[in-house]
Picture 1 (cartoon, rainbow, N blue to C red):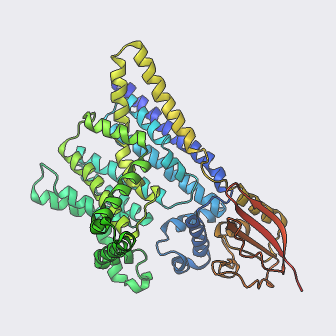
Picture 2: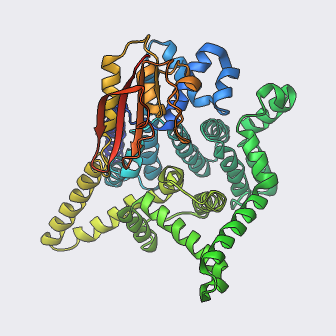
Picture 3: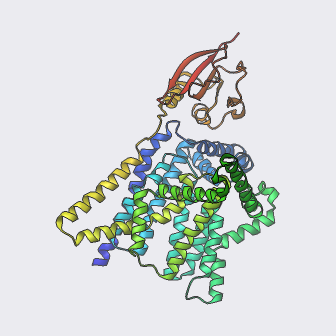
Length: 500
């Protein structure tokens, strides 16, 4: 009876996870109706339109790894607009992330209350919820990355070979969203080679089987020829990283250290620039991981690990800790090569760390249960307030308002027709006004080097600028129609071209 009730409770939590994720995605969808799509999001929508018009070659001309835009393109063929199609796709993928996050936690502890903590942790995780307002391919990568992790854990528990084949299919799908999935696939195969309790032949067999889609893909690639696959898309990135990655990292390191030496000379710090370089990189790297995972969740994860709140067998430790180490190495090499990281890039690692947080909450709650009534009440209120605050924080806008850009976009949508030629210097506004199918190269205004005021081919000109530095203020052939700005002196001006 207890077992069936636990299963019923688990089922309720799974349903709640999917429903809550859908609701949060619908709330976030309001942002996409405004010009809050990222520049990458506009690129994916344009790529989807190019695929429907000109096929794979046209899509890869815009973007070399177009699996995500192609799915959007097929959803568009069902009657949805491109932006609605992309939003529906991301809503499904985000629900998959939430579902498999909870399912992984249940793999380690089937107690429904722990599953509830997992559900609250992921749906109130503001770094993840911030991605709901964007159109990013990463959602597909995260969804199938977690799916692959769960499949691998299930195989270690059951040793049914069917899960190995499913792992290969799932990690291949993750790689079609982000090419890093190929690196994770081969890394996971290496980790499986060190699993305890298997003979050498069994380890080799399992490592080979779990990569079956990649072996098949390699054969197809060699058979068809890379020239027919338009230089292999993002596969070229892996080739460049393997052949030139170390040289690029060392070159960037030398350039940064050279700049530091010039800035510090002749101070004493001149003699410690290399130590300062690595200290800054490591410090920034740790900072980004903690901020992406969030301070409280990071603390809960460390607390759960320190308290041994989760008993892992050796195989699970190799897989989980191994993936964390691999993700850390990938991100640190990326940081050394590019000298920046965003929370979106760190999120795959953060999700692996976040999986510890529910067990930290459970350990705190268990200690509160054996304490006085006052402490039980205090712990319950504190946990509830934290999750409520974290959820609300996910959807509270912090920073300079973009309302000025929304107003400018709405004005253009309401006061222009499809026949009006418009040029703007913002790709998001251009998409909102003209759609995915537009004369982009002609209509995108480049004001980075100033403007020659040659706008005779257009009826309207819209320009976004900051700190009162309007690049078009000297143009006498432009009549100002509307001007919008925010509290940080960012502005958007709309002009009508005066015909002479």
